[in-house]
Length: 181
Image (cartoon, rainbow, N blue to C red; front, side):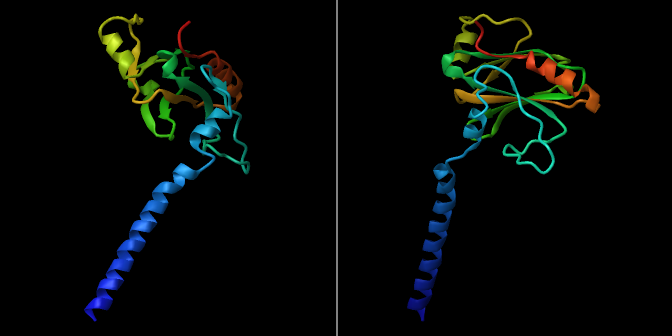
């Protein structure tokens, strides 16, 4: 009786371990990830306006069809990256994501920033150089430190009226993203 109970407990524990290992390993085996989906837009060091999501159509990035999105891939191995420009006077947000699609930083115009976006994105080594004043930055630059070199920035705009959508897309396309030249 006790022997059977021990075998049963051992089987349940082994099954649980196998189950957990399988679940944790599956994302590593996936061929299509958030990073590969983002890379398909070829947005390295530039803002790319994402096409509007039409109802009933595939939405691989799970985006809200009412918003306008600008995407930019950043490689901090090339040096610090900067996201700068002026956005429309309506709700907007900027988020930085790592390769896994996890937000590492986010801000909105409701944080008292106004319409002007001036964000400097640095890795740990670049932040140390910044602290030692070996990298010059503009006054008022919002400094963000990233734990990884490969990131993507997603800028979201919410036009108050559908008729304003083309103007908002134009203003978003004028945002600069990437290393300063």
